[in-house]
Length: 139
Image 1 (cartoon, helix red, strand yellow):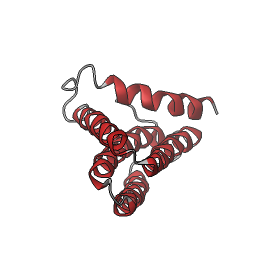
Image 2: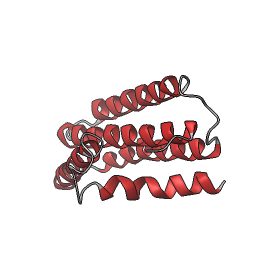
Image 3: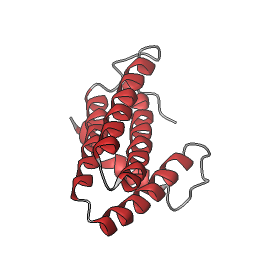
Image 4: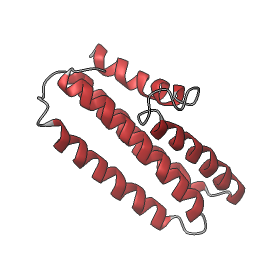
């Protein structure tokens, strides 16, 4: 249980720490950096448009947290051959979910597009962390 909580809390810290050194571990640190830039642009555009429906982009972010928490609960339970399938299914779900949110964001699609790029980068980072946790093989 402590591993699940550690990963749940650690995910945003590790993601946003990449803002300080975006080229520290290329390409791993570039993905969060681009995601943070997209978050800032999407938030500013959304606030300017007063698009209240954009809060729904928090749900795929929450799903990323659920993935890392589950991987913390099952730390070391999978071997390396099983992880790509789990990660691919998760990323496909987030891609579809984010695309649907952009499609439904009438009047604020540009802001929604940037927020979708943020959720995809956050999900990719979460998938990387959960992959390490599922196999208990850390960088």
